[in-house]
Image 1 (cartoon, rainbow over the protein chains, first blue to last red):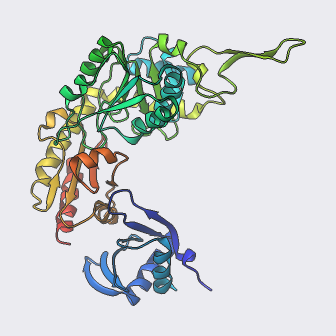
Image 2: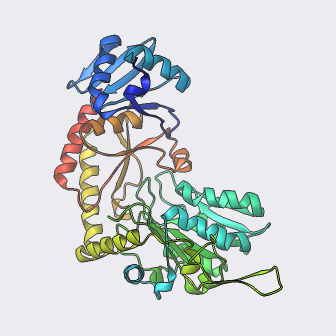
Length: 89
Length: 345
């Protein structure tokens, strides 16, 4: 059975007052992770098929085809983990 | 070869003696070394340490930690709204209580070049020492420690084509000789002995610079840093600076084409190095950095380990484009092309 850790290499809190959280997907799983997210989340905007502005459960975030995603306004890493689990699994 | 590297690096910054070059892990460790080896024994309650608000955290935090132990006061010198140092404020804060002034030669956020020679002169007039964070200057311009007359200069290998994990603390020989070791272990001692019938251990420190290099040295790092220095010298540091200034001027000119982009730092580009901090309206710096990352363009985002300066700028964070000898005008054109796409987000 898959877990969030199968897809996620690292979760980093950014420095800066924005307190964004960046999710870095595993290199060999990044395409699959991005595809899964785009399948479940609501696409609000996309740019050149590389950058996707999406929403899921009232949380807006951006996904990059390079295999990274940036979340803002997330309470904590636990809340983020719940969202990732719902999107990826 | 490791000692050859020391000599080469000594000549690179025009140190009088190779013994004035201490190998460390990087700028942060170099400043910590001064804080603990010199500061721990020479700073006491009532003394003052003078630091600017544009410093990297590595030139703030060690002094803050130490002040909690020794009880001395840290005074912070102001920075002007454009990111330049407020020299009047800095100089007015010197007193007979000031024991050391700590200042970056070049700001890692704005690229502003500080007149450290001027501040060093004032520091010495007050009987204080001068420590310079050269992490952003030594890789980009000719730095002459004797001309600047600084007491300590710290810099890192990985910012000047060398590897990570190697850096340098330059210190005037007479100061290094008086200082106690930073860490204990092998290499930094001459003798560790127990006299017969006594339970007391007698230790004799090694001479500088080895007195400050406990444990097996990073030999590969030192030699690699020497190779980097040789490479830079072959180009010439004046050429390095000239190239970066041309790129910076060009980048600033092109970035001004972007209506949603705000540039930070001084408008007088003659007083800054190849660093351009900026923000894009409506986007966090991390969004901007990830966008560039998608195009294979690496920039820095966040506080750049200089949160106090961001408070001066009243910024939540900033994005930072920076240039070095390997960057070209064509890359800046591509950078601006992507920046214009970002504006459309």
